[in-house]
Length: 268
Ligand code: CIR
Image (tube, rainbow, N blue to C red):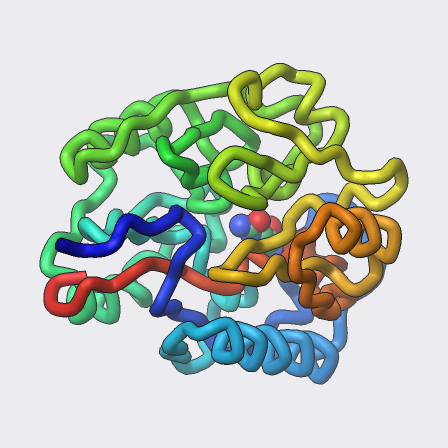
């Protein structure tokens, strides 16, 4: 019998080397370009932390034509049961799906494609015991419903909830700390989406720290957020601070740089 495991137990990830064009990555508000060297260093440290957390890392080559392709979380979703190819809501990112599809077809026996014409970004999906799905600037109603039909086929329950105005991706503002606890910004927690969870609220002024990432025993947190780090440390979590200053300039955080799943061997 397989051991019961938590949704944050992963043994494999897929990541993608940043391209030099990453400096032109999409952003809602311009705070200056990130540097390629800075992004690369942050990405390297992230991959090292993943290995240390016990995960086998596959790294795909850089794609110069797609500045945001380093953020592999958005064009697809992966689970032990299979993968889903999505349709990102940003026009410049739609073709990232074709780029990642062959890798997913090699790694998973079941690879579903989002039906219809709606848009859905992986960054809008928080996988808990259920999968919480969201409408946001990037995921529309048609995309969210199409994604629900795919999740059904993989045997995953899901719900569609609303992201507050001004939040790019659902996971921009929250992450899972353990099976029953979420880390959330105050604005997202106030919207009432996490009714059944224990909620740990990000200290005011450190909202970008909400995109933390629980992987096995550790919680990866942006190194620029000392109050969040201290709070989680005191709460007993094993915190691994990682620099996100450069990727933060293009609206990214720690979850965006990998597709994570627990592989039981063949077919996922
Ligand atoms: C974008 O706007 O698409 C990228 N610059 C950032 C993507 C962040 N991805 C994520 O939160 N899952």
